[in-house]
Image (cartoon, rainbow, N blue to C red):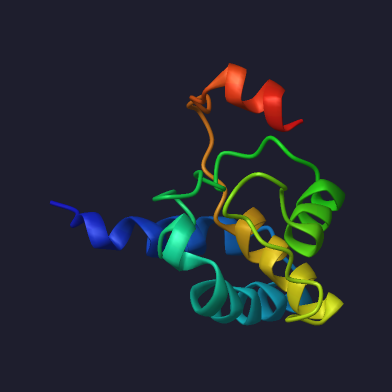
Length: 117
């Protein structure tokens, strides 16, 4: 029987099969940076908490970089452009992409989204 804590390990191994060594290094660095700066809201494995689940896709890499850099007004998502280097932000996005889960649709408050965006 597979333990729940092993799920991130299995998904990381499966996704690692399709990544270059440079992508793996960036994802590893991104995981460290994510856990230090983002996991308090988005959960240890980016699967949500106070902030949304980031592993189900939806936004482009450029959109994620912009969101991390600039934040989202009217929410707890603050801008990180002055706290993190561009390379660190890009590595967080690489980590999020390496952690991506497929299959389920994101459930959200559409009216709140319309208000914000």
